[in-house]
Length: 152
Length: 137
Image (cartoon, rainbow over all chains, first blue to last red; front, top):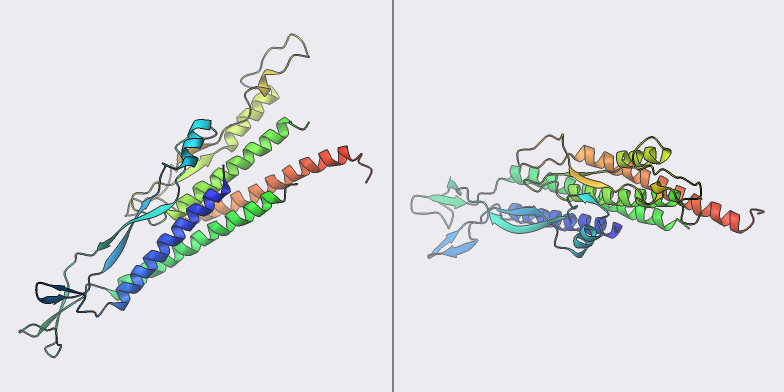
């Protein structure tokens, strides 16, 4: 049973949370972007993006070894977390009256991205707290390994 | 002495502590994963049963007709940790039941337990060394 697996588990979570933070940063940066993609001769505003997570399970050498040797009973421990997809938020775009804007339609209305900065801030705090929790777990792994090296 | 039951128990306990640490790390890694069910490691109660059994008030005690026969209790080895799902947790809207406070306190407890075990193991070898070196130093 290797402590290194604990470090890998925490590392996968750090990577996933970093990606969440990057995605949130992208959403906030593009909160006013009206020209994200060119579809059918018209500019479409930016769509909010979300990270989809799922647990990373079995299939690893370590799991098969543990199962074969039988040093643990019950369900196998997981191997961390992985990002399965970056999904787009399908809620409708905001419709704003701004006739002076170059992308406004003939009635003077303009489609704005479906990004809600408040929602993004909440998600950002959640992601950075998760990141911190996983750093704590990683530091615990490190100090446990150093303790084990003190056996002599 | 070198291959004593004491050392076996320490070794298996260290294994269990490592497994518990990994399980907690995995729970923390999946703190935002929808539908994730957290897990925990059960070990101490099994170990206690095993030690009680060795003390003679339990299972697997072989009847010896001669004191020089090997005791049966040694054969089975020591308790094996078990990974089970966390039973009494609140569940969030996303179907995830990881409790940050519980997991971090368990992490801290397990870390202290682990360092205690490493000290005991080091002490075991220290005793061996003092026997080998004649104890005169």
